[in-house]
Image 1 (cartoon, rainbow, N blue to C red):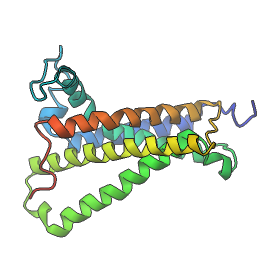
Image 2 (cartoon, rainbow, N blue to C red):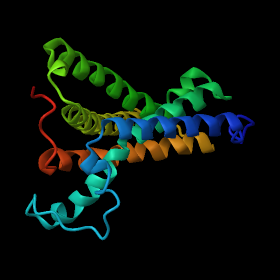
Image 3 (cartoon, rainbow, N blue to C red):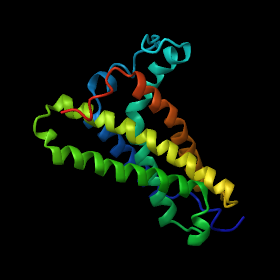
Image 4 (cartoon, rainbow, N blue to C red):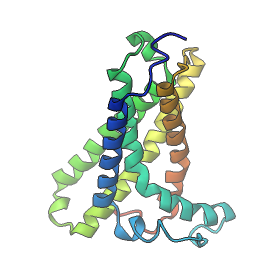
Amino acid sequence: MSARERRPITLFDLLILAGATALGLSLVQFGWPRQVAGAWIFTWPLAPSHAGGYPSKTWVLPIAERAAPFLPCLAAWTGAFLVTRLCGPCPRRRRLLRQPGVVAAVAALSILTIESMLLIGSAWFDGRFKFMRPPRINEFVANGVVLLAHHAGWAVLVSWLTLVLIGQWYPEPSWVDRWGRVLGCTWILVGPVASLLIDHAPWWGSFLSG
Protein backbone atom coordinates (compact mmCIF):
# COMPACT_ATOMS: atom_id res chain seq x y z
CA MET A 1 0.00 0.00 0.00
CA SER A 2 1.45 3.37 -1.03
CA ALA A 3 1.86 6.41 1.17
CA ARG A 4 -1.09 8.05 -0.54
CA GLU A 5 -3.32 5.10 0.32
CA ARG A 6 -2.17 5.23 3.95
CA ARG A 7 -3.31 8.84 4.24
CA PRO A 8 -4.48 9.36 7.82
CA ILE A 9 -7.57 11.26 8.88
CA THR A 10 -6.57 14.85 9.58
CA LEU A 11 -8.11 17.70 11.54
CA PHE A 12 -9.05 19.31 8.23
CA ASP A 13 -11.09 16.22 7.29
CA LEU A 14 -12.96 16.32 10.61
CA LEU A 15 -13.65 20.05 10.28
CA ILE A 16 -15.01 19.57 6.76
CA LEU A 17 -17.27 16.75 7.98
CA ALA A 18 -18.52 18.79 10.95
CA GLY A 19 -19.22 21.79 8.73
CA ALA A 20 -21.10 19.64 6.23
CA THR A 21 -23.21 18.12 9.02
CA ALA A 22 -24.09 21.58 10.34
CA LEU A 23 -25.02 22.73 6.84
CA GLY A 24 -27.21 19.67 6.25
CA LEU A 25 -29.04 20.07 9.55
CA SER A 26 -29.63 23.77 8.88
CA LEU A 27 -31.19 22.90 5.53
CA VAL A 28 -33.44 20.37 7.27
CA GLN A 29 -34.51 23.01 9.80
CA PHE A 30 -35.21 25.55 7.06
CA GLY A 31 -36.89 23.49 4.43
CA TRP A 32 -38.68 20.51 5.85
CA PRO A 33 -42.34 20.54 6.90
CA ARG A 34 -42.42 20.70 10.68
CA GLN A 35 -44.85 17.80 10.97
CA VAL A 36 -42.30 15.60 9.21
CA ALA A 37 -39.05 16.95 10.64
CA GLY A 38 -40.34 17.26 14.18
CA ALA A 39 -42.46 14.78 16.06
CA TRP A 40 -42.68 12.20 13.28
CA ILE A 41 -38.95 11.43 13.40
CA PHE A 42 -38.97 10.70 17.10
CA THR A 43 -42.29 8.90 17.34
CA TRP A 44 -41.60 5.29 18.37
CA PRO A 45 -42.64 2.57 17.99
CA LEU A 46 -43.45 3.01 14.34
CA ALA A 47 -47.11 2.90 13.48
CA PRO A 48 -48.06 1.13 10.24
CA SER A 49 -49.13 3.34 7.37
CA HIS A 50 -52.41 2.73 5.56
CA ALA A 51 -51.39 4.64 2.42
CA GLY A 52 -50.14 1.75 0.33
CA GLY A 53 -52.13 -1.43 0.92
CA TYR A 54 -49.13 -3.73 0.45
CA PRO A 55 -47.40 -5.04 3.60
CA SER A 56 -43.98 -3.76 2.49
CA LYS A 57 -45.32 -0.27 1.85
CA THR A 58 -47.35 -0.32 5.03
CA TRP A 59 -44.27 -0.78 7.19
CA VAL A 60 -41.52 0.78 5.06
CA LEU A 61 -43.26 4.12 4.45
CA PRO A 62 -43.04 5.29 8.11
CA ILE A 63 -39.32 4.50 8.12
CA ALA A 64 -38.84 6.35 4.83
CA GLU A 65 -40.67 9.39 6.17
CA ARG A 66 -38.34 9.55 9.17
CA ALA A 67 -35.21 9.09 7.07
CA ALA A 68 -36.12 11.56 4.31
CA PRO A 69 -35.48 14.79 6.31
CA PHE A 70 -31.81 13.79 6.59
CA LEU A 71 -31.31 13.74 2.80
CA PRO A 72 -29.75 17.25 2.90
CA CYS A 73 -27.15 15.84 5.32
CA LEU A 74 -26.36 13.08 2.84
CA ALA A 75 -25.86 15.66 0.10
CA ALA A 76 -23.63 17.76 2.37
CA TRP A 77 -21.55 14.71 3.35
CA THR A 78 -21.11 13.88 -0.33
CA GLY A 79 -19.77 17.37 -0.97
CA ALA A 80 -17.49 17.05 2.06
CA PHE A 81 -16.14 13.77 0.71
CA LEU A 82 -15.31 15.33 -2.64
CA VAL A 83 -13.53 18.26 -0.98
CA THR A 84 -11.56 15.88 1.23
CA ARG A 85 -10.66 13.63 -1.69
CA LEU A 86 -9.46 16.48 -3.90
CA CYS A 87 -7.67 18.55 -1.26
CA GLY A 88 -5.66 15.76 0.32
CA PRO A 89 -3.00 13.57 -1.29
CA CYS A 90 -4.67 11.75 -4.15
CA PRO A 91 -3.71 9.74 -7.25
CA ARG A 92 -3.45 11.18 -10.72
CA ARG A 93 -6.60 12.53 -12.34
CA ARG A 94 -6.99 9.60 -14.73
CA ARG A 95 -6.95 7.04 -11.91
CA LEU A 96 -9.00 9.29 -9.65
CA LEU A 97 -11.86 9.31 -12.14
CA ARG A 98 -11.96 5.51 -12.05
CA GLN A 99 -12.51 5.32 -8.30
CA PRO A 100 -16.14 4.44 -7.43
CA GLY A 101 -16.27 6.89 -4.54
CA VAL A 102 -15.32 9.88 -6.68
CA VAL A 103 -17.59 8.80 -9.53
CA ALA A 104 -20.54 8.42 -7.15
CA ALA A 105 -19.95 11.86 -5.62
CA VAL A 106 -19.62 13.56 -9.00
CA ALA A 107 -22.75 11.85 -10.35
CA ALA A 108 -24.88 12.68 -7.30
CA LEU A 109 -23.69 16.28 -6.94
CA SER A 110 -24.08 16.96 -10.66
CA ILE A 111 -27.71 15.85 -10.61
CA LEU A 112 -28.44 17.76 -7.40
CA THR A 113 -26.85 20.96 -8.68
CA ILE A 114 -28.32 20.99 -12.18
CA GLU A 115 -31.85 19.91 -11.26
CA SER A 116 -32.07 22.17 -8.19
CA MET A 117 -31.18 25.14 -10.39
CA LEU A 118 -33.87 24.10 -12.85
CA LEU A 119 -36.51 23.67 -10.14
CA ILE A 120 -35.74 26.95 -8.39
CA GLY A 121 -35.34 28.79 -11.69
CA SER A 122 -38.68 27.60 -13.04
CA ALA A 123 -40.47 28.53 -9.80
CA TRP A 124 -38.78 31.94 -9.75
CA PHE A 125 -39.56 32.58 -13.41
CA ASP A 126 -43.22 31.70 -12.88
CA GLY A 127 -43.40 34.00 -9.85
CA ARG A 128 -44.66 31.26 -7.55
CA PHE A 129 -42.44 32.30 -4.65
CA LYS A 130 -44.24 35.63 -4.43
CA PHE A 131 -47.53 33.95 -3.55
CA MET A 132 -46.20 31.13 -1.35
CA ARG A 133 -46.51 31.35 2.38
CA PRO A 134 -43.67 29.86 4.49
CA PRO A 135 -45.39 26.47 4.95
CA ARG A 136 -45.80 26.20 1.18
CA ILE A 137 -42.14 27.07 0.62
CA ASN A 138 -41.17 24.38 3.14
CA GLU A 139 -43.31 21.90 1.24
CA PHE A 140 -41.76 23.01 -2.05
CA VAL A 141 -38.26 22.40 -0.63
CA ALA A 142 -39.17 19.01 0.87
CA ASN A 143 -40.76 17.80 -2.35
CA GLY A 144 -37.80 19.04 -4.36
CA VAL A 145 -35.29 17.32 -2.06
CA VAL A 146 -37.05 13.97 -2.43
CA LEU A 147 -37.27 14.30 -6.21
CA LEU A 148 -33.60 15.26 -6.56
CA ALA A 149 -32.49 12.44 -4.24
CA HIS A 150 -34.53 9.99 -6.31
CA HIS A 151 -32.72 11.05 -9.49
CA ALA A 152 -29.31 11.20 -7.80
CA GLY A 153 -29.64 7.65 -6.51
CA TRP A 154 -30.31 6.27 -9.97
CA ALA A 155 -27.49 8.39 -11.42
CA VAL A 156 -25.01 6.79 -9.01
CA LEU A 157 -26.28 3.31 -9.88
CA VAL A 158 -25.93 3.95 -13.62
CA SER A 159 -22.45 5.43 -13.22
CA TRP A 160 -21.25 2.45 -11.18
CA LEU A 161 -22.70 -0.04 -13.65
CA THR A 162 -20.92 1.84 -16.42
CA LEU A 163 -17.59 1.57 -14.58
CA VAL A 164 -18.06 -2.17 -14.16
CA LEU A 165 -19.14 -2.80 -17.76
CA ILE A 166 -16.19 -0.92 -19.28
CA GLY A 167 -13.72 -2.51 -16.87
CA GLN A 168 -12.73 0.72 -15.12
CA TRP A 169 -13.75 -0.15 -11.53
CA TYR A 170 -10.60 0.56 -9.51
CA PRO A 171 -11.38 1.14 -5.82
CA GLU A 172 -8.58 2.42 -3.61
CA PRO A 173 -7.88 0.57 -0.32
CA SER A 174 -8.05 3.76 1.75
CA TRP A 175 -10.51 5.16 4.25
CA VAL A 176 -11.44 8.08 2.02
CA ASP A 177 -12.47 5.94 -0.96
CA ARG A 178 -14.34 3.57 1.36
CA TRP A 179 -16.22 6.58 2.69
CA GLY A 180 -17.14 7.49 -0.89
CA ARG A 181 -18.32 3.96 -1.59
CA VAL A 182 -20.51 3.99 1.53
CA LEU A 183 -22.05 7.28 0.39
CA GLY A 184 -22.61 5.84 -3.08
CA CYS A 185 -24.37 2.76 -1.67
CA THR A 186 -26.52 5.06 0.46
CA TRP A 187 -27.54 7.10 -2.59
CA ILE A 188 -28.49 3.91 -4.42
CA LEU A 189 -30.69 2.86 -1.49
CA VAL A 190 -32.25 6.32 -1.47
CA GLY A 191 -33.62 5.79 -5.00
CA PRO A 192 -36.38 3.29 -4.14
CA VAL A 193 -37.04 5.00 -0.80
CA ALA A 194 -37.69 8.30 -2.57
CA SER A 195 -39.91 6.48 -5.09
CA LEU A 196 -42.00 5.18 -2.20
CA LEU A 197 -42.36 8.70 -0.78
CA ILE A 198 -43.34 10.12 -4.16
CA ASP A 199 -46.06 7.49 -4.52
CA HIS A 200 -47.49 7.49 -1.01
CA ALA A 201 -46.29 10.32 1.28
CA PRO A 202 -49.28 12.55 2.17
CA TRP A 203 -47.14 15.73 1.99
CA TRP A 204 -45.90 14.98 -1.54
CA GLY A 205 -47.29 16.54 -4.69
CA SER A 206 -47.46 20.33 -4.49
CA PHE A 207 -43.97 21.46 -5.50
CA LEU A 208 -45.08 22.07 -9.08
CA SER A 209 -48.29 23.85 -8.08
CA GLY A 210 -48.71 27.48 -7.30
